[in-house]
Image 1 (cartoon, rainbow, N blue to C red):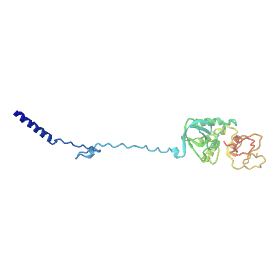
Image 2 (image 1 turned 45 degrees about the vertical axis):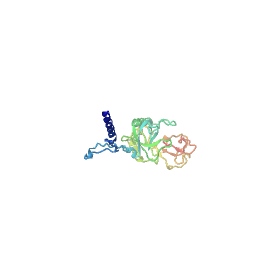
Image 3 (image 1 turned 180 degrees about the horizontal axis):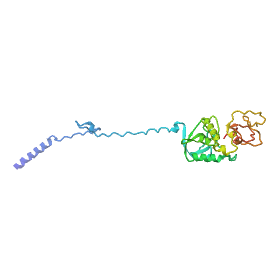
Image 4 (image 1 turned 60 degrees about the horizontal axis):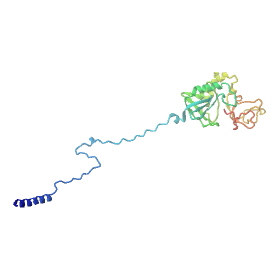
Length: 269
């Protein structure tokens, strides 16, 4: 009984002391910084900082020399005749300042040295990359581009005239190289090259000219259908290769049928 009376107050005292004792552990609030911490005394240069890789915009390609010079480089897909080609995209090109004998005009027979001119043109440019240079006009009435044609160091228009495959033929206002073509024709004729020796009827009177004013004439033998030139009336029937004039005015009834497309201009090619 005495022991019980002693233990009971002792247990109560222990319980009271335990419940009233202060908390010995403390909670610490943790804060997360949005920036990486740097230890004091640590050299900032030793940090491993990865910078974003800047985007690189490719430099714009410079214009090609052809574009700067107002020229165009393209591939020849077909050769139509001695002075006409077709390029990629289907556009036809008519050589400026020259005229080769006809081979594909359905209104005319194949002219002397026409096939040879077509073959030489094909040999020069068919399936090859050429440079096209414009003069003043963009197209002719057939919507063909009017161009000077170069392949490598060869000026094709000049070559065909100089080697006797074509005549020099002036079609203003596209006359940038006309003096050069005229000189090339004189050289070919002097040396009897190409058509100048192969075609017996070829002479200075066969060289196409641009008619601007009517020649001196008494008027009695000049057909009124061609008021700016003097062409005798039919018969005999004449074709463009039989006369010296090119691109002259034509009025009805046009007995020689020089104006095949009825646009009022005769012998345009």
